[in-house]
Image (tube, rainbow over all chains, first blue to last red; front, side):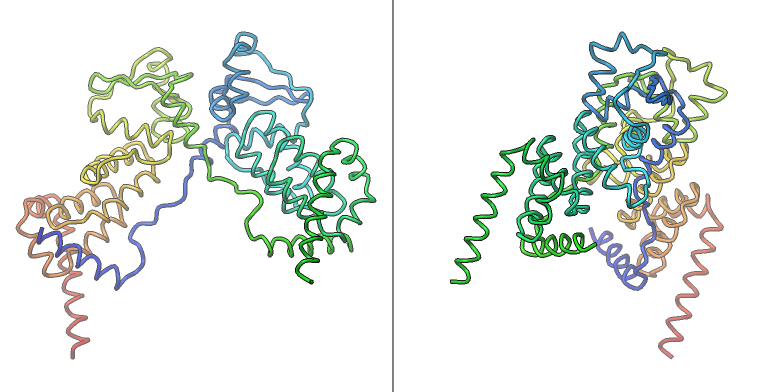
Length: 221
Length: 221
């Protein structure tokens, strides 16, 4: 016991004298290792064809990352997608499928221009919902929250409602609830689309607006 | 441009009023997904036999995480370890191989009792060096830095020297350099082993001790 006390004291004293840690553990490199695996396609056992472009991947990694891929690649459809077969995806942009695969392996979005981010986040949110990838969905929601603008907020709100994104929906409503913003948004095509496609949402918005107005009047009185 | 300015202002105002973020992105779940893959053994294509116990894994994941596994599983030895074959590992404890596989898939050490940590970290450091897994090696070095004791520091220093662990070596020397600690350590079997196996290290230690002593005298004078 004495030995331990001596040792710890000395250790502490010396650490205090030289605060630099002796060993620095770098952050996780797992995403880089798996990213390399995607890039080299080593051991890939499933092929996707998207708008004529071929992507090779690993069915058990896809299945581990997405419950929908799990069903599609290992479930009842497994026979029709046996090794060597090619899975055709017709309703997705090449760039989007590439970003989706990048996320599966790297656990992050690929680098992109700032002006691309909002549009890519919208498409990726739809893809994340389709493949039941909850973390990717939240990353896209977060990105869209930071890209809210008068010209796009109505369509973003419709998207949030359609894909059951509570946080993004709240952010859109908070954005819209200011009379100045709402007036500017109400003349956009997006808002017209919103009133037609999600009338219940417009009612919710009006109700929140009224509550906020009532609170302000009460504070002033 | 005006619209964007309006929108950002409103957004900022409302954020300030309700600082709670609309969307909270959880930390990476990749390690959990791959951990599940190890646990379920789905798609496993390589079998290891360690002290009679069977472990099933994925050769391309092992290869992505360790350059040595890459050579062993995909290089010249590939033919002898074709699917279905079993790789016998004779010189490793079951618990250690289990922890190694756990790290490959989960990117973390398995849970263990505090009193097990130091011994497991020593063995895992050797395994990490053998399979060239640099981050695991640094994690073990860091753990051992925090477990330095009079009774074990000499053997830890010999281990650090043997496996070229600069940080751990420095931590051991800093620990030993206090005359109180050194005197206590010098009567241990570990120190006797150290003087025989790494005489150069003992010289280095004496030199550092002399320098430190000289500095102290200079400060006092």
